[in-house]
Image (cartoon, rainbow, N blue to C red; front, side, top):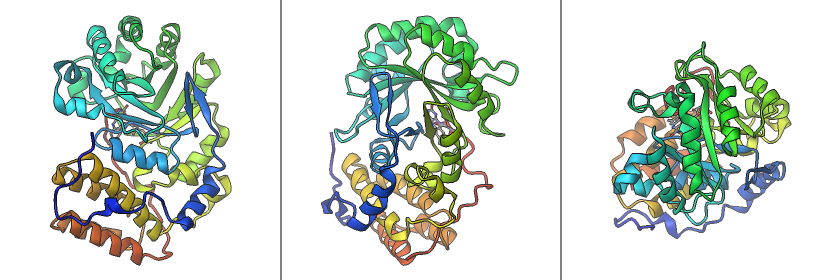
Length: 376
Ligand SMILES: Cc1cc2nc3c(=O)[nH]c(=O)nc-3n(C[C@H](O)[C@H](O)[C@H](O)COP(=O)(O)O)c2cc1C
């Protein structure tokens, strides 16, 4: 399944898979604090999971986040119709790497029959679970009745869930929003149908479809659902920084939490959030040179996954620029990276920048809007 990069690019993939002893030691100090969790038949190594993100949660990023403490991951949303048509690009998105431990595949679509057919194909790729996208607010998806539009047609849900489950062996979960709009907060009803149909857990992004990504995630609503839930609930929304995650982890009745955007600017968030005292501190133990190790591993996974140098460049560039957020001179680094000619130059720039940071601290301005659109 993996192809190697056929180019003159410096071959970082020959480098050891191991992080340095110093970084390993720093990471282990946090990893020891993780609380494992069993949801359905899936054992997650931590309650902090990586949320699905289109264009981001592919094999390299999922592997990297598991290495950096995510208890489990989910693929980006994948079209049931693309699968059923045998579209090669869609089928490639279903692939899972043998090193991935707790990965689910997320499907989207609107009709029970197509979703059931696609789920059999998706399951043959070896995920630990399948998930239905019931939160995507994007017009293209919603106008056909998929994503968050499924929350408007509750009568469609039991046939959808039961027909998918009929031929599935792995657990089926759903990812929802709080409702279509403020007047129809119906996550509780959706959860009740899900429970009756054997769905094993629910993840909820605490916004309505109408809100898209505006305002704040409604954690009061999520915590209220915890009072009445009959099946495990994963809370999600605005858990952007270790302090916020750690605070939520301590007071929530959710069975687990999902982090999406927070992991893009701080890939160590799954670890840093586990120590409440540390999360409260301003100083990070993870420095520029640690980020450089992470980027080399990202390079390794990405070049081993994709053959197309352009796709590799796009993927690596966007992530290293996000990872730089909050470090000194990140804006200048960003311009240099986007002006670089090729992957080798990008990696050289990244090495010089992150290694040159020494012990410089990362201060992210969480008040700035960061990525206010997505598929869930
Ligand atoms: C770029 C991007 C892509 C997303 N793609 C998906 C997706 O494919 N499936 C899904 O269920 N949610 C998707 N989401 C929603 C996230 O999983 C998550 O619910 C949302 O971003 C709120 O969490 P956060 O505040 O931690 O980012 C996406 C979000 C973003 C920012």
